Length: 301
Length: 292
Image (cartoon, rainbow over the protein chains, first blue to last red):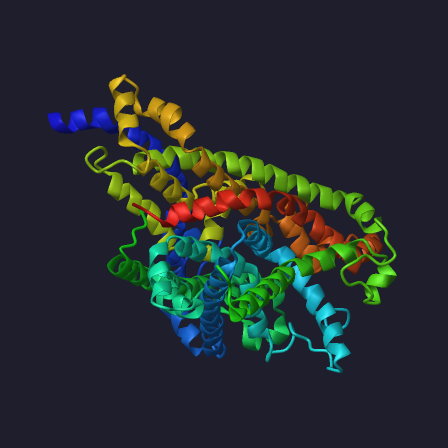
């Protein structure tokens, strides 16, 4: 007891420092977690979480029978997976190419330019993308028109929509993605390159045999950490660019939850869908962190 | 050293490729800028490429003359200032105890997991919305500030920075009789300025760019922050903005040059500061991901 009291006397300021943030977390993260109870209720706002009647697994059964659910899950996985792969390949390639530039100022100038879209919100970028891709006045279709092509409604055509999402997402994020790979590149021991050169390896051979293996740990790490994102197709982007005519190829779990919950006020059902997503994501993220810890000795803190 | 022909060819192509790539990132923004300074007729006829046609600042006069736009701008400034101040205070304060070793602070690991768990799992959109509603924040500026006040990623970034500071500094300040609060305020905070700049800038940009919370937590368009306002005007063409006599205003706000001007004004502060921010961001990202 005496020991506990002494310990408290020594550590109380540290507890005291954690408490304010903890209150916020309880209020805005942990209470909503308890709110997933709504997924098993016929939630009535006036009666609240404790007064609404329980309905068991009704919402989950309804979800299984929901005609579009297969397509929505497929769209989510399809768009998210393509984004993960492209979001890995493009920044790595660009980082290697940037690293070939010998003049520091040039490297920095290019970097500064390609980061730009990352810092702008999807609202602004969507405004720009909608204008640029417009079938009537958009500059892309004007250019295509010079080659005699018919205007393409990129954002209203199910054939194009998922790919436009992937391309515009890569366009926004690849510059920022190169930061981490460039950092990894500069950490590769220069003597490895010198040794390869003495062995007669050209730049290409050096890239394959020195650069890529040197980047492997960080590549594997980023890939692993991205596994948790296969259910995140990018709400901000899709919500601002889609329309009912591309629901077939562009409606994803998050946009579906939004429409059901906020627009149609089916609170219980939307919570159930969101809960399923959260649980699966939680498992994936946990697995990926454990794997990152095992293989790359990655720790969060 | 003499370079081979193949090598020089590669370097040339590489340079051209990278130049095209960077132009690809800039051009859409330049295009929008040119449209915003062109006349309405030139813009709708699709004559504008990367330079204004029939130059006129009319779209900007139009935008800055709109009380709706200025009001939304003001809401955003409020959320950036309040949100960043509160978040930074919490980040500095929370990262300190969490950066301690277990023998210094017994519950450290327990607390850390409580924080990290919130990035691994969340209750989803609807319970989150219902909670904020129950707290009574709907339609208030605090709804844009308080729910996101604890930024776990920033706390982790800063606590990793604290951990890399020399242990002797803390020990000597403790020997001199300084308590934890004094140590944090007088030693840790001043020494972690680069990390504080990084997390602070992350927070500012995050607040500046947020739009979704404004859309669902604000019932009245007068309370929208700038990004939410733009979302409703430019992307959704929200009819709630229409008072019956305002058809003309709506047309003005939604025509191509005016949309372009509104986008550019909202992007401008970021365009100005991001080249300066970039070195902080790079430092921050590398710092947060590489640990001893």
